[in-house]
Structures are given as structure tokens and as C-alpha cells.
Image (cartoon, rainbow, N blue to C red; front, side, top):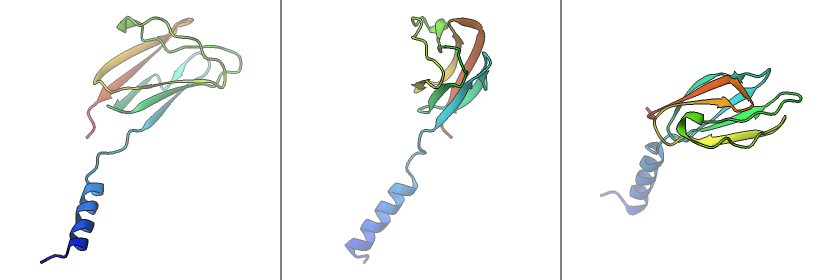
Length: 110
């Protein structure tokens, strides 16, 4: 019969090896009035961080189609972040620069 200490080690090993994958951070840079990349595919639970790397220009990330109010602007060297828990396609734009458009596609973790 397996002693209790060995059994505990086996259980702990199995728990750690079968745990779900960690959520990821995905970076979208804002430069020359563009979201780069403009479309990303992530897994549910991942966080997207938009970083403004412009020299002078302010921006925001507005999910206008979802009925949200326009968010505050963020300036060079600042960022905005959001965790996506729901599956689907989420289109966004920059409020002050509506030609800047992007899309986040959220899929199930594999």
C-alpha cells in the first residue's frame, strides 16, 4: 500500500499538471493613429493592454457598438486595459479619431 506522503505528492503533482492555462496579456500598440495589430484573437480571461506610443497624440478605446459611454483619453506613455471574459467579437474605435478601428475576437481556451 502506498504511504500517505507518496500519495499526497502524487495528488499535488496531478493538480498542478492539470490546472488551466494562465490568462495572457496581449499588447496592442497605438502609433501613427493606428491600432497595431488592428485585430487580435485571444482566449476568454485574457487581458488586452492598449499602449499609446505616440509622441504627442491622445487616444481612447471605445466599444461604441456595445452602448458604452465614451471613455477617458489616455496620452503618450499611458495605457488602457481590459479583461475579456465573454466569447464573441468586440469591435472598437478611437473616439477622437473614428477612422482608427480595431477588433478583439475572444474564443474558448483550447
